[in-house]
Length: 149
Image (cartoon, rainbow, N blue to C red; front, side, top):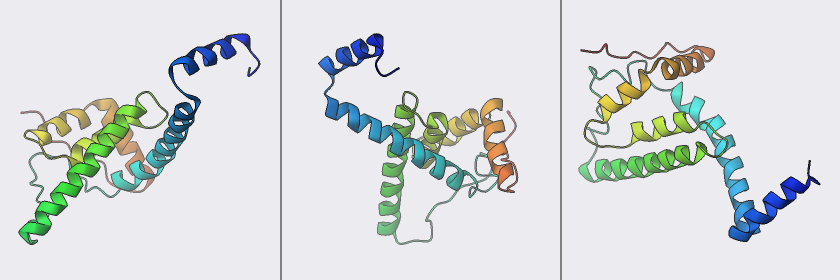
């Protein structure tokens, strides 16, 4: 397939607009995101408590810490969440678990109404089934979602 005239023409056309170095960088980034998501997603999902996405359960974070540490912690958590969200978006076009990575990014970000957005996304039958299937492989209980009001 490498010597295929159609592939050679396609590669030539792409290289007119994007440099070879950029293509190599995107390929390496794609591989890193793919391998990273295969490791990070299960690592994070199996450590979440079963009621993490239940909006009826309060989710305090760093309440007992010094205010400066709490602000720094929230800042770091939001930056990491934004990175996961961006990486998940890229994984929609590159290899990787884009939707799950975006969900983790959203769950790390702080914004008004976030818990309801999370519950709506996680409550989708296909998403919930995939997450609970992954948790089951590691012997964790299924995620609990609050029933619709």
